Image (cartoon, rainbow, N blue to C red):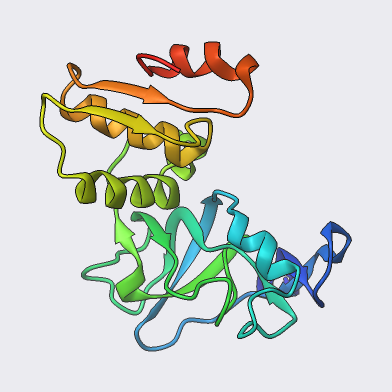
Amino acid sequence: HWRKFLMKAIVVSKAGGPEVLTYTDVPKPTIKSGWSLVKVMGFGINRSEIFTREGKSPSVQFPRILGIEAVGMIAESSDPEQLPVGQKVISIMGEMGRAFDGSYAEYVLLPNEQIYPVESTLSWANLAAIPETFYTAFGIFKSLQITKSDHVLVRAATSGVGIAVMKLIKGYAASISVTGTTRSANKSDQLLAAGFDDV
C-alpha cells in the first residue's frame, strides 16, 4: 500500500543528452491551496524540453521532471467547483517543467489557473497533440489577420506548428490558398496530403 504514495516519472538529474533521462519512482505530489493534481494521460514533446534537458534554460534547477504541457483528468482538486475530480483537462506552459515539475510523470501538480477543463471525444493521444502546438499556431493565425482572399505561405510547413497553422486557416476559409515550404522535396506529397494547396 506504500505504492500509492509513489508514481513513475522521467527525471533529469543533471544537464546532458538523452542518457540523463531516468525512468524511476518518485513521491506523488500532494495538493496545496490553489493547486490541483492531474492524472497525466498524455503530453506532447517540445524542442524547449530538449534545451532544458541540455542545461540551456538557466533558471531550471535539477533534478527536474520535464514536460511543459499535459492532458489528463483531475485526480485531486483544491477547487472542486471549477475543477471537479474526474474532469478532463489540458495544461500548457506557465513554468511547468521548469520552475516546478512537469508532465513526464503519472501525475503533475499544477496551479489551478493553468488548468483548462475540456470536453472532447478525441483519444488521449490525439488530444495530447493539440495544446502547445495549436496554441502556438492559433497565436500565429490571429496575428496574420487574414482575409478570405489572401494567399498564405507557411515556412517550415512540415513541423507540427506549420501543419496546425494550415489547418486553422483552412478551417477559417477553405478557399484560402496555403502554400507550404520544406527543406526536403521528398516531403512534398505528405504536405499536399495534409491539406496544403502547393509546396
